[in-house]
Image (cartoon, rainbow, N blue to C red; front, side):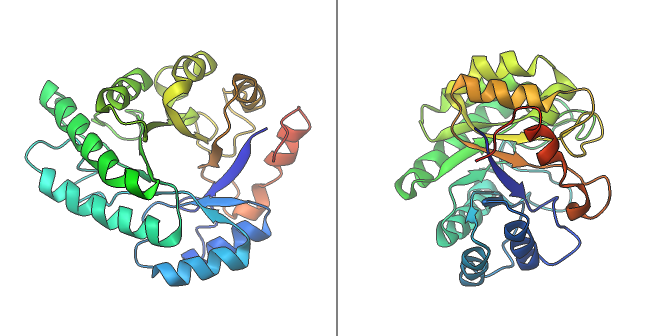
Length: 262
């Protein structure tokens, strides 16, 4: 029975972030995840979450400079990664969240050095996060949306997580990115379930509400339940109608096909 969270980087994004938290609670979401919410003081965020009746999950590590899309795999920029990671870790601990997503980054040509840097940075981040009960997440992103992204398959993400040697290093499995690059989503969920820490969903190819497109999310979510996944499923899609509230009927449509939300 999937536990559904709202990704406030994409949902309810026509209003300030604290209002997004309120809107997510009013819409029935029990948890929220963020992209880069660091301008909000933790005390203000905790108050907004309590008022909405939602719990916080993950945040993204800041991306770096204006030409960066993550620093976790960038050779020679380990100090900068540690600094950006510290920003995310301090904030998520202060608001009572559960995870930090370390954005791997992009490269014109991916080399063994990028992979080694990424593995070492994730291992260091996991060690720093573990005393706080925080998980470290890493994901693959499809090459259409982010050309040059360093992790190009779910198998690469899983292998890197395993190589860190830390139990709190986990894969974020986004069905949109996996389907766009590889397909065979259910078999890949099954194969890597032991290292999956979070799942996200969106339609393919338009990244809209996850009740249409080429991927049958009613089947995927039912299979995820059968496999014994007990974590959260993040709704990280771009609303087709513009306003998030106008498209939330997808949850009822999937429920009518057997998806039981908790």
